[in-house]
Image (tube, rainbow, N blue to C red; front, side, top):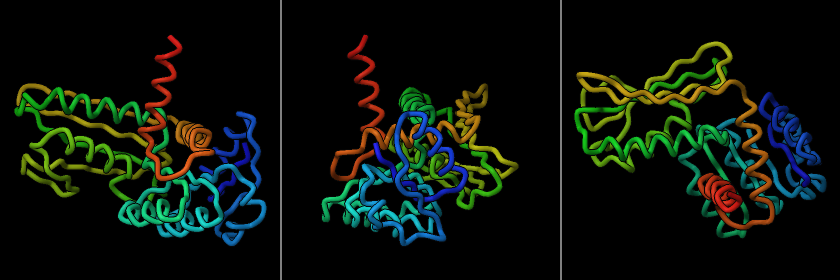
Amino acid sequence: MKIALIGYGKMGHAIERHALERGHEIVCRVDADNIDDIGSEAFRSADVAIEFTMPSAAFDNCLRAMDAGVPIVSGTTGWSDSLGKVREACERGGGTLMWSSNFSIGVNLFMSLNRYLTRLMKPFPQYRPSMHEVHHIHKLDHPSGTAITLAQGIIADDPAITDWTEEPSDNPSQLVISHERRGEVPGIHSITWNSAVDSITITHDAKSRDGFALGAVMAGEWLAGKKGFHTIDEFINDLISIAENER
């Protein structure tokens, strides 16, 4: 498979390494200093583009990649307010796009566990959830896109939780999300259900960027040849179905 990279920082290099290890070819590398290469002949030859850049650039990057006719996997966070517009453009113009706040297979299994635990806790209102996320000092947005997705999962499955906040709150209908930025931490997300007598905590602790990079490459393999707007859940569910059928 031919892959174009949009963003060639630490994540871009990690994605490149995993792509090459899986037998793929990198046909174009786009970064801030050659952004106009999106749409070049080399870029257009790609089967899929993988985009990890900045929140301020992701919207235009996705539109330009779709205009070039290249399916795009985007893992940039901090711009989810514009996703609806990108989805409309994708579907209106016959483009192909998958966006996720996190492409790590482990994180997405953690998200499924989060929703399952939320459903288990519904009959027990004495437990109330909170969340804490830790990332490296270079991460600009907070809470993380992954934390927001986890929060949305809790809100969707627990009618007693109506929204999330970063401010301290005693309101039982609000999920409090705290954040911390230190060192080079790739990402830690912990969700605690606390009661007066005990607490239950689930945690995902990324050891490196490799999980995000490998998941993005695998998502690109899945997305190539498809049309329309797709979600990480479709991709993960396909993997699970394939594994179950092979048993």
